[in-house]
Image 1 (cartoon, rainbow, N blue to C red):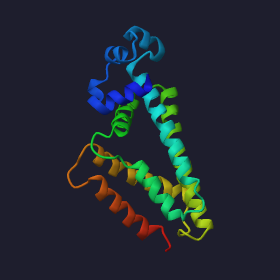
Image 2: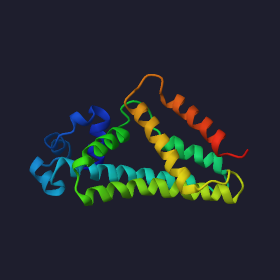
Image 3: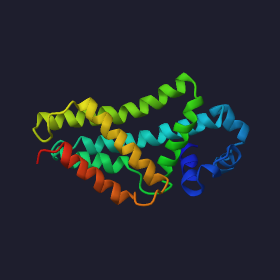
Image 4: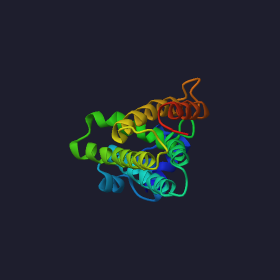
Amino acid sequence: MLAAAMATIAERGLEGLTMAGLGRDVGMSSGHLLYYFRTKDELLLRTLEWSEGRLGAERSALLSRHHLPVAERLAAYVELYVPDGPRDPHWTLWLEVWNRSQNADAEARERQAAIEGAWHRDLVALLAEGISRGEVRPVDPDRYATRLRALLDGFSVHVAVDIPGTGREQVLAHVREHLTDSLLTG
């Protein structure tokens, strides 16, 4: 069901994702879907959690390549983070869930925070490794990760909504320049 929801978002955008349409796609009634998900908000959050689980596994595999320099793994983290382009389905979903979180209950907000926390913890660990190996400047890994992720979020929103002059390659170049100027030692 969650893969079908993500495929619908990729093909038709969020406006194309309805409980009735998803039900048709997976051979269930919309009522049956509501039994499992209660609301469209829950469907969106569960789909995001599923998608993040896949990205988390990919991120973990990239970051566990300890034989590679930290700078290379940091670049891979950034490339995984930044949307592929306008209407990237993962980022489209993220933006919608963030928007809906204003009215979400505490449990849903905790689930969203868990997703954010995984990205943050992985980045902090990578920065700490880079410091210990002398590959990055001595910074507070938690503070630097918070600032870098805010930069990535801002740029990623621009890519996802197709703001002129902020395509994926331009954003990656800006981030590389920022990392070179502020973090990398070599």
